[in-house]
Amino acid sequence: MRPFELIIRMAGFEDRPQRIISDIGKLDFDYVPEKLVHRDGPMQKLFSVLKSSVEESMNQRLAITGSVGTGKSSLSKRFCLDFQEWAGKKGQRVEYAIVNCRTRSTPPSVLLKVLDRFQPNFPDRGFSTAEMLEILRKHLTKDSVHLIVVLDEVNVLVKKSGPDLLYSLSRFDDERVTGSKHSLSLIMVSQQPVNEFLDPATLSTLKRTNLLQLDKYTENELAGIVRQRVELAFHPGTVDDDIIAFIASISSEFGDARFAIEILENSGRMANDDGSDCIGPEHVRAAKAMTYSVVTESKLASLGEQNRLALLGIARMMGKRSFATTGEAEKAYTIVCEEFNQKPRGHTQFWEYLQSLGNLGLIGLSMSGKGMVGKTSIITLPDIPAKALEEKLMELMGSN
Image (cartoon, rainbow, N blue to C red):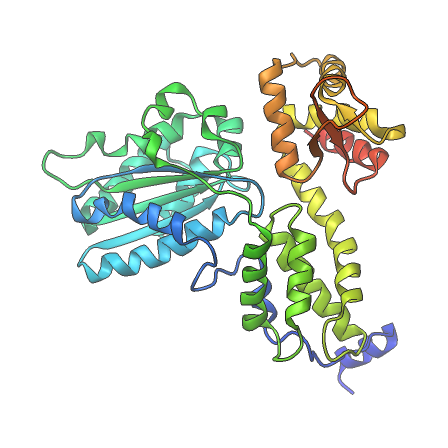
């Protein structure tokens, strides 16, 4: 008996053959299918804007925004791959660099990732931002390359390091040699609308028509996404149409493709552990219960400070209540701001925070019904215990 097999047997593990999932990698969040389901419109918009970089030697700046699970990262990756292939057929070399600004939140670390595309093992210290930009310019000019830089979660970079790098990249070609081609286009990806975190100078470099907002997926669209992943990642006959529809239905409250895909994966794992030949409704229900807590924590971690303060105020109110009005929520938010020495934002901005929290599925928002005077929005907590939500938010805010 081999050592690893002995360890498994001693630990009580059983290495069951995988009869449900055929290719687990196709369920990974980082996997990008060759064809994105229900994103033809945004793909065409990106192409319509950026094709001028090849056909007319122009640079472009775009922003892609949308809530968690709307396909922002997948869209930008798939577009870069397809656009690079299209440009190659036109005789133009296009390269791309996709940078996650949550893990690379300073200008040098961002540029190090970009330069790695042209000069692997570039030293990680000893060069200023201006020097790194000039080295990048020389690479692009020498190789006659048009580079697309994608800054994913760009708001994290701006919050930590300010907007200077964005401005430099957006005006990168201003200092090019007369007669040379434009060499760099910029795609900014964020959950927040760019006008909430960009400075006026950088915002002025963005055309209004170059702002791409991705809506949450509908139930039918989620069903299409789940069906595609079933075809890619599961053995034939293990997931029937009713199960696909069920997963889409319970995911539709959030419109979040990642949530739906994770439920699908966890359902498959549970069915296999049960020794089942296919996924059943109970596997899906159990997977949702397990997945929900993980996804919720991810969403809470992605919130900006003011959104967290608003949600904390709501959580503290809802311990012994089934609902609250927006007026009550705003008062609770003001109290929390005072506690954390923050200036509360105005009513209009607070309403935007509520809409953002609603879009993420962290709160429910609906109009008041019978028995209430006047019209107002009613706030509820969908599936999150108020006390648990308060504790998690306090933990997150204490770690910042």
